Length: 274
Image 1 (tube, rainbow, N blue to C red):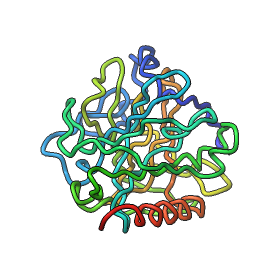
Image 2: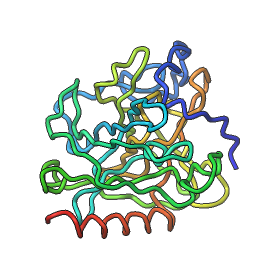
Image 3: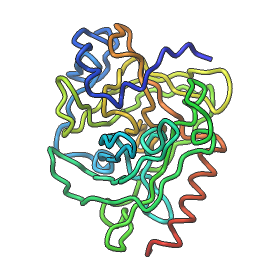
Image 4: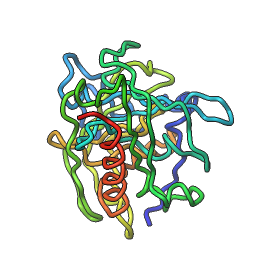
């Protein structure tokens, strides 16, 4: 197992106050005009893949805090599924509530509407076991949404095709998308980071790790794209004070994700008009 000295700082915008220094060495920043974390603002007009990305909002039922993550429309027969990180839906042993997806979110505007969750799914292993670095290969979740009886893809267009990879597969030219929040980031604009990713663990379904991007608060659940397909979701990052920062991506592969996608699609097809 890679020695991941991780905290899910992606939840906490205040964690960015310590990240004023260069977290990604300048020679490793692949994004044109990339900042200290490797990120740059996405230029308009947005591409199809960028329009399928949005903000996922939820609420912690105990603290009442609003949790902001990223998400993206994933292609399915039900045409109503959103891909995100499991910890954006189920954290500290409890299910988050009031989940809603805002595709194409831009500077406070919701051009494609607000889509309330009908149901959420995370792997059984994520829900039933306490958090540990060994859980990160399972940090992926799905959200079934509906609005006025319409499927999501009727408004956004066809969802992203999942790119399933197995442990040991490296991927070059990934584009990470998200809505960073906190010091220096507004939380209302879409940012991108280009990165190459290699394997991070020696067992299980595997993890992708990129050292070209250091995902800040608000980045959890955002998609990692390659050639118009989605290869994974942002799970977590090294502490933001790390001068050699990295980001962990949960792969879309393995039986846990395949089963969850099939189950959620089947459930939503019974409840959402074509």
